Length: 498
Image (tube, rainbow, N blue to C red; front, side, top):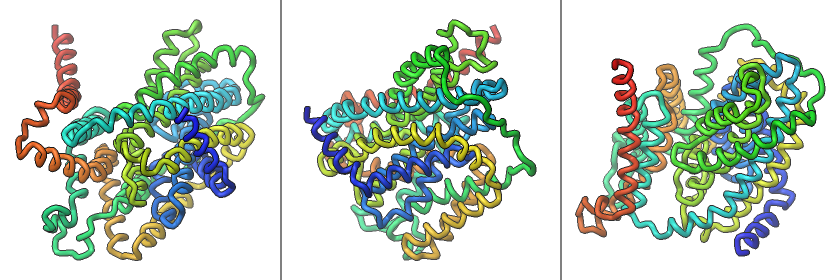
């Protein structure tokens, strides 16, 4: 009952005219961002970070949540009509959705994606509402050693598991850790990696690095790969509503996708890619018409899209309750909390209860808004796809420059942002993951603080991380995440040789 009372208070705040306007703006902007190929929620939130510093914290996070959910909704449009996933999580949607569009069934594909996103998003948001306080109660029992070990899991999972190369991922994590400790050490007062520059004594602003890595680097990377000429955009013809048969084949896939997406999003390095692939595999195995897969099976759109949006709510749970981001967008949102002087974690639900519950309530409101925005305005989203790429990329760079300079009116910040942007473009060119840099930079100082506290409590005994059962279990999981992939590859290679 206490949770319902807190949620009711959150609705009272989220339903004020100002916050409703921010929720609508976030949903609209997020959907437009999701529609555009290659422009994702992480880039948009990174762009908005410096612009929203003077906005009240509650309104800003309602806006960010709307952008995050909206981008998950909008990514299906470009996948279905253009066969170009706007987000990596919508790759699976393109497999079946584009085939449906080629057969003149783009409308039902878009409809099942939108309705499935609404159903799964609502279920996952309800799970976030009722499970988050339970996780908070458990997290309050963890000490510094357990927190350090938990952060090690996040480091390893994001760096070594999701990327194409564990070595590249760990190298980028190391770079993020180095960037995170630039500035004056709060315990010893000694400057670290400042190279004598006064501007670096306060450290490198996470916002500047985020904008450089996502806005500038992504824009330069996309512009460098731009192909002159237009992609094939399939026309939207026929009815956009689901037939009775379409609905009968979709609703079970929506529910299964929600049940798959939320837990995958909540685990470290869960994100939205793994649950969408898993949901597609499950639907293909359970379908009574497996021969349609690859030729436009509606279940292949309904299930992955539901899993995609359910994972978005799942990602928010460890970020809010533990302060651990499990996706790039969550890492950017975590840096936004820190820019407001707020540290996500177990105490967030006590110290900033109004902010947290207003944000959760806005997710329910945003879900309803997105259902209304997606289907009636599909014609508008199709027109958005026709925006010339040079104008789009140029506008992003202009907004990035204005926002970064507006944080502190510093030319040094602009130089750092564009240097990071060029480096980020090279990272993308040679397939180095970006997420470990941001997560290492954000969680690095927190991990260092937890490590020092644990060593102080144990009077310098490093075995404290192994003698405490929960901490040792977390470290064992991290070791398994590093060792399991090469061992599995070696076993598969030995079987092939045999």
